Image 1 (cartoon, rainbow, N blue to C red):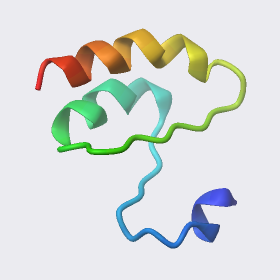
Image 2: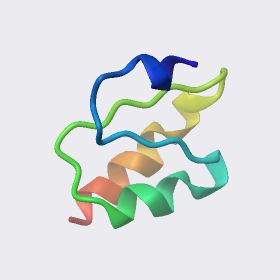
Image 3: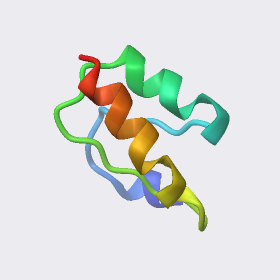
Length: 53
């Protein structure tokens, strides 16, 4: 799995049903997302959540 190859200690994996809630709970400086085909549908919801903070 790619996550295991990343050296950062500040990393996580979550289900897409929990993604926006997880983004909202964290102080994010840089966000990298990876998905299996439909991650592009989360761009606007993630952007909207980040703009709340």
